[in-house]
Image 1 (cartoon, one colour):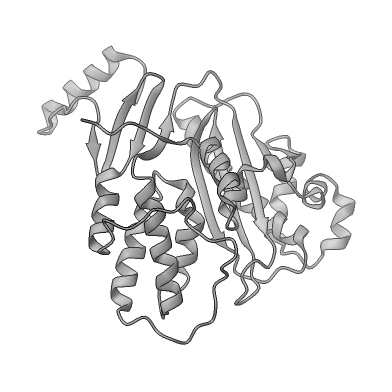
Image 2 (cartoon, rainbow, N blue to C red):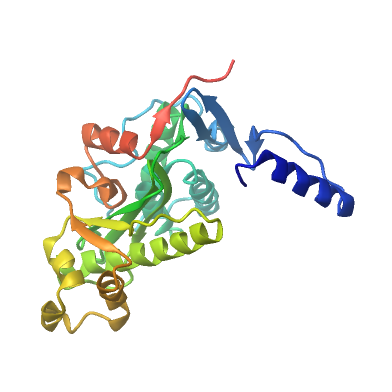
Length: 310
């Protein structure tokens, strides 16, 4: 990658003298991901892949839904096993690949993956709801556009004891390079947290590690910004914990490796700021949301609709 056409052509020429290569030109369709050019950039979409998943599930003509997860339908501990667990695992695995261009599916797919070993009829119902949401958003994809800024800012959020089965918390983050979403995750934490501050601080530790890697990659590409990355969290206790060593007296039970966030902040490499829950973009990765709230956050993550190609 680069912005010097002469150097790129020279490199391709030198490679062609040693290897048999073919220049395919601009990317259009690669590993199931289609590139749709727009006036302000491009959209990465997996329309064909989504249609294939619906066909494999026998739901090509199903009715669509506005969200992939219901707010009022928690995961139950049903003992009625699903009659075809292999089919469940295959579809859930396929949905994991779909999250490459659809961050709005991350929470719902992560929840489905937690029951791969023994799926029940209830879990199959959750999977079908995700597929019905996909049916109504076939023309959605991840927008990538030129950005005047190369600053990194990340949103971290956690839902304390959100799982009704084991009371473990779900964390999520979204990392932006300028205006473009470049990394995101939704994951259940491995241990039960004692407070909301604990779980939010663990979420900050996860996004801190991710941003550290992204900064390292950008430095290799000579695209690093002089401005320290900004991490946004909606828990005041966690933000204080990052900056105030005295506050650690209240959190001696927190694992030591979490505290590297404070070291990053004290050295000036990162800045941690408070953001209101209303403006917390990572909220979409931690819990089911009402349709209006879900749609707002989806658009802010640059998951947008495009006109299908003729």
